[in-house]
Length: 441
Image (tube, rainbow, N blue to C red):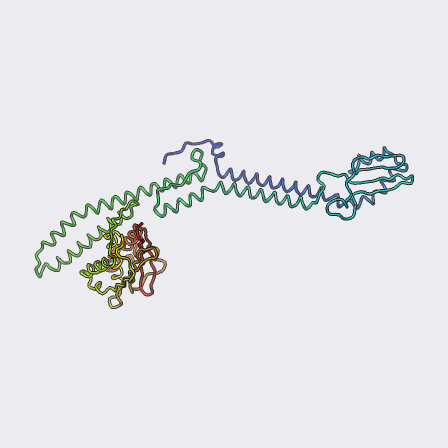
């Protein structure tokens, strides 16, 4: 991973996710405070007029006495200038108003008694009207409260959308980590700010580099296994040839038989290693051909019976409507059946029921292979790990109790290479393995 150029503290601050989140929250707090204070202020400025309107009637007597009779126009103008009221004088001698009076309350929406205008009549027949100054903010104060709440909710939604957009790379990193954990390294995590990366972009770049390093190590491991397996085949073949040339007399026959058996196990192990690496490749190719699955299963059982006589007693149940033939890779399916049945035989009690093999049609026109033994099963927490390479419930790794842990791993790879599924379950007693192989398109 190439080292990125150093940036000044100002450049780092401009493209820092922490700085942007802090600024966003500060702006949100400022906007919400402004909206709250403005809305509540308007609500109070609108509501106080209704609260003080009844008091104007008590004060109107003093104001009318101050204006006098006949009305003194200068005093009326001074009152209108000093107080937030509108004064109107109508009569035989004076007709004057400091401004427009509000409409009567009965004409407004809401109705109710009219306290907006208070009138007094002087001794000389003039009528003096007093009213609080109408302002643009007059209205129902509850409306401003609801508008304030709506504004606060709108600001909160806007802040959520912005934070959601800022943190979108976290979902990309999570999706990428799950892909890499499943061994899918082809699609890297998208980096949204490659030129000016923030903290999340730098994290995405680091995780992408980590995935590239892991993929390189896995490729190197796979190449090493393939090279070692290929190199071991030649000396193993020569050793088997030399063992077969040993004389078959009473003294050497037991050692010759044991040596040939061990060499055969080594050959199977190397073949399994090679096949597992081929099937684990994303470009694994299948050689499909019409295959009679029932006949193939009986052929595998016969080959196992040559080394394990108990295999001859395996119960085979074939559904009457099993499709035959089915387009499958016969060599890979043979490997799948051999590993399933060998695993079932190894874990079946010597004096108990023999393993069962069921062949049934699947819903999509394919086949279902179900193998069950009658052993002790495995703890439920170990079921998800049984099909991993080299995993075994016990650490002894003796051939009689499970080999090196490649059998079920190969079964899963063969099923996935055919586009099928693989499932394990405890059958109480024993372990059941279900493989579904769909019909090829």
